[in-house]
Image 1 (cartoon, rainbow, N blue to C red):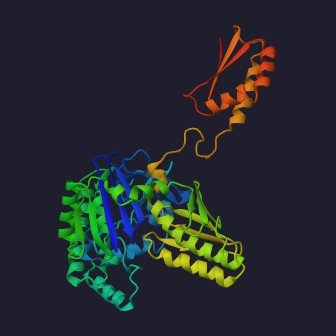
Image 2 (cartoon, rainbow, N blue to C red; image 1 turned 120 degrees about the horizontal axis):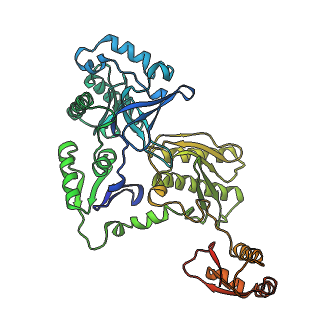
Image 3 (cartoon, one colour; image 1 turned 30 degrees about the horizontal axis):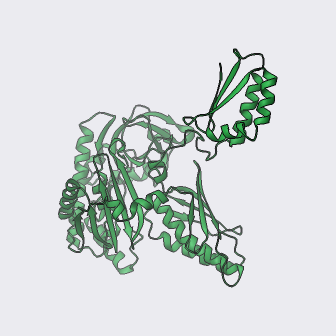
Length: 501
């Protein structure tokens, strides 16, 4: 059984998807930093880069959005009438200009051109957002893709007969020359439910076209609903048996949404009124803190280390305290199998994306490498993010990618250390101590007055007054000034002050 736990305050909203009593995914949105993923804008092309086959589009944000050539559709006037005249010329034009027949960016866009785009990836780090002109509108059961012309079925729907049934229904209800993706939630749904979902999405699209024609670029045309509604819409499935929320207004909003779009008597929505904060009561707060740790211990005694860089994420597997019972190969296999399951869990929990390199412990037997790989693939099936995994190499490495559409949990709830600037290291106490001693030598014949005051962190001051006291005495004679050392609680380990009195 799965649950959705929602902690909503005026400042931020946090949502946890709990599967089998474990926190599987976490979502956070702050009022000041509301996400823009899925928003649709009328933008203006500010720069075309033929050498990169891309363009930058002004959509009204601080940084221009990035648009790659494969994400460009050059709409014609006929497009806006496609639901009315179903022009054959439109279909041929879309095949020429769309993804089916890739052209150069200069053939599709010009500077100053206005274009309808949707945010496909939120700003990450120092980069602006990425956009696509192939708009997609998600509903409860379907995703409408006005600029596509095909039917797709969620890979999570595995039953062949059900896939065929849903494909036939989608073909019947979709507009000509428009595409549809059937979502996982549609499994077992009645034809009337899919038809109602399609009608709703078509109305949304008509409103978008009207707004586009009535505004100038750059402007926001369509905004995704807040995170509570999005989470219920995107996470809700037959496995969800309960939604618990601690805010009355949010409770009302979700109840109205469920009654209107997702009537399901098997799912209960509850208003939490306990004395403990809701995330404390469900032990979610602890999982959030653990999600910031680099080292994750396995139940067997082994552990994994997760290192995130700007370009990729490296995950290292170690046996740790696990010594096994029979032989080395069996110990390594058990550790790797447990690590494979934990790694997938951590990827979802921390929302880690991009290029991921997993360094499993080397296994001699090919069948053992295959077991670990299959375990990794099997657990990735529950991950909604698109992944691509390569076989384990002879070195025990797995290369994989996981689609990244927003910042990781770590980047969202933490910031770079102002002292180490992301390196994870600061200079040692002894390094700072010897820096101070070298600086004192530079004061020879330069210091005014008779005394020199050194203010330093307590640990550094202790070394100067004890272990290096003899060197300090020698320096007093050398520079001709009395040296006074004081511990300063307001200074960081790397900080110190040398003051001539």
